[in-house]
Image: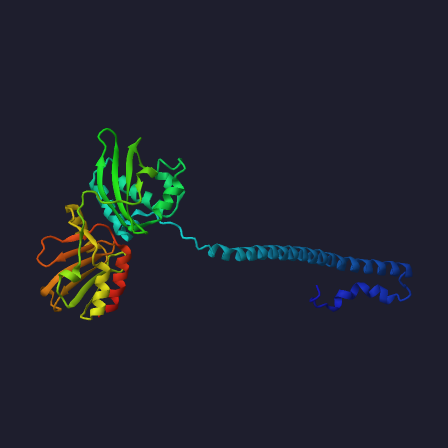
Length: 366
């Protein structure tokens, strides 16, 4: 309507008023009409004003709510961030009971595991239980120990764990496994070297009852000092019986769990260096190894760190007069030139002596 163009004829209806100027509008009517117009105008503008006030109020409430929620959420986030470092600061190492990892990382475990499998017990799972039992004792893990031991409720657990913590775990070996004639029980005779230097032994019984494999070991069957019975001891004095002026050696060292190896070697004619090495391994009790012990040495030669020392009057390998093999588990093997077999071995492991010799040889290495 505002944009409509008015024609002249649109105002013809006002002509009578123009023709009669004496007809003036009633003053009261004019005032009444003005009030109506003013009131109608106020009503038109009041509604948008109310609407704006309500809208602004709602917007303020929503904004305030969102702000409060954001503040609460931020506090929670800060609380979470503040507590996270505490969890990362916990450096307690979780024991690993993965049997594959254990037998890969520990030669003694691997050797015992294979020997237990070869015993053909009623359940091949027994070999795994036996290794995990020893590992639980090593870790002072009473809960894990209780899964395998039938003795976990007799009050001897803590004492047994203390005794096992005094053992060099890389010196464990199974002397023999004997099945019971009347019951599904196998006696395992375990040998080891303690940190004080004594040779220890333990009888451990693997039981097969109610389709379950369990371990039975009492404190009475744990011997902390063993003297070999019916084994004639000999004392070897290399420096007094062998004429030589040259010491050479080859070392085979395993560098990772995948059995990758590195080799070290060296020779010396320095009398001081030679005496330093031989003084550690001279005059040690030795014995003739059994067939089982000879087999163990052959396996250890391929699967563990070892050093072979050659004594002679030149660096030529074929002119050696005496060979001493040092195994990581502390067993030393002595073989004079011309001696059949692998030679004699020490009556017990010497782990600490091995560590001393390794340090000396690594210093001589080329």
